Image (cartoon, one colour):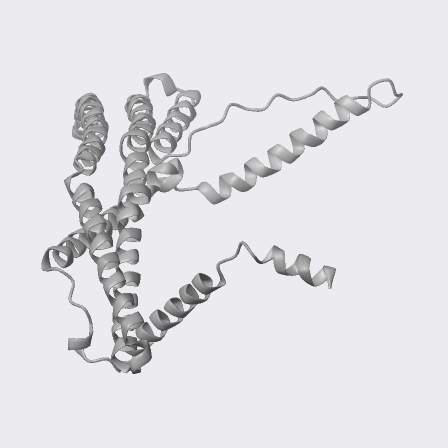
Length: 311
């Protein structure tokens, strides 16, 4: 008997009636949602939400879709190798080098004090940027060095052209790194912040409105089918559900308006354009300069070629 009393007292603080009522409401709302999805509820039995609310919903949906659409493409700026031509091959080579250095350094450390010859530890090479501008700059540098090392190389116009071309792409490569960092900081991070905070909060408020609306329509169905003894209770449930829906709709409207009035997205877009403009302006200036220098070499080379053909 004592055990029963303890068990009874442990439940004394619980409002089982309220819990059961909450469970019933949730079940009725689920049934209501299922019936609506299956087309078993007529349109006039579904509570109509204010037109202002529906218009704001459509605008927030458009804003969210715009954020997701641009984010899907612009996220490439988080990975600098998005335009790198030989990433896979070089990654394999680098992996082999990393393993080799690891084995050598392990041996150098663990063979100390033994009779076995210990290799000298090797330093980790400087990390190379993996972008198309960097790749073009390195390829042109290698091409210039190859031509210059051949007999008569220092006088080779093509080698000099490669050297000028390499310098231009090194400037462009530096600008590419700055651009990507600027886009990540000035556009991607705040863009995603807006998506994950204010837009998401508005979307959750809308979900609360939908849940409240389903609860109201389920309560109306319960009232419609209630017997005489349950009419009053069912009517109160409808009134409470109506008040809840009004409140949640007002909150959602306020949050959706705040999202749509937020100037951050257009400011973020401006930062994206600014970063791209600086990069492409730098690239255009560097290429314009080097093109003029290479054109002089080209004209001189063609003049000498024609002169040699005339003799």
